[in-house]
Image 1 (spheres, one colour):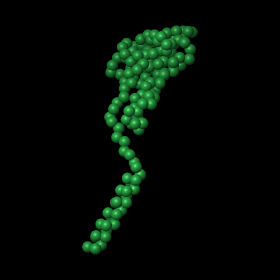
Image 2 (cartoon, helix red, strand yellow; image 1 turned 120 degrees about the horizontal axis):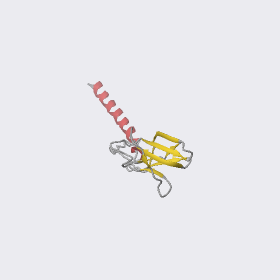
Image 3 (cartoon, rainbow, N blue to C red; image 1 turned 180 degrees about the horizontal axis):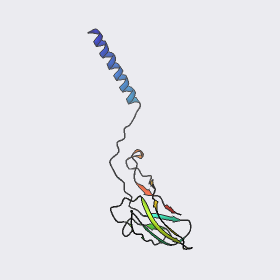
Image 4 (spheres, helix red, strand yellow; image 1 turned 135 degrees about the vertical axis):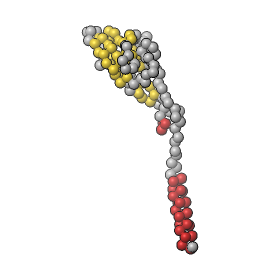
Length: 137
């Protein structure tokens, strides 16, 4: 009985010391909410040389629609009709471009994302994102 009591006391002391060490480390457990952030803004197309015409769309097998340069001089493709036919997860943009020399580029280009730098639930949880400009060769 004496031996069993001594074993219980030693075990209790070890558990107490282990608990104190864990608590003194100050480790915080971050619980992130199950938020999904969808970016619904425009996709910007960037060209090395000014194109003569631009058409684009989102989704496999889509039909490109003409894109008009915005008043601030950017080529923006909105995530709305006629460029987007839901349900589509926007991960690439199909572009059909004709340059000043009548050379044509028609291909799907990947869209990369980047953080907005806003982290409503802390930087560990991620946060909203936006699309990086898509460079068209």
